[in-house]
Image 1 (cartoon, rainbow, N blue to C red):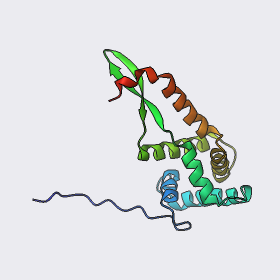
Image 2: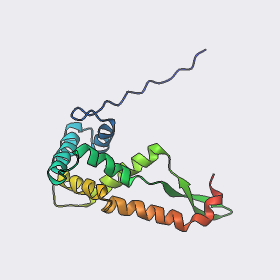
Image 3: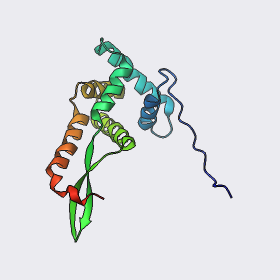
Image 4: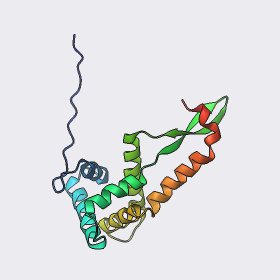
Length: 156
């Protein structure tokens, strides 16, 4: 008897740049299933990036910004003998990407008072230049992992 597997719907690349990474990011921006609005926000941010960063393609700026935000290691709680230790662990590729998306969008959604596509453009340009709230978050995670290196032998 063969195994029954559920077929997952394949993610389609975004219509403008034909990029899977952009499509995933648009899906993360999306709230309440309003994909058209999420696309307008993302493309508005890329258009804004194009006016600010003249030497690079906006999609390359976006890709590099995500790469710069991706964490290499993180800490996870592990209970050993009644005590909880923060154990540094390597982060796999999928989780790196999802954390980078989450941190960028968290930074964008915290800032109020300006249109979201401008805040997203700001955060992406800042991440591209290795500064901004998402990069700070990544550095804090790395710093915490470095500080708890003594508990690395608890890694599972």
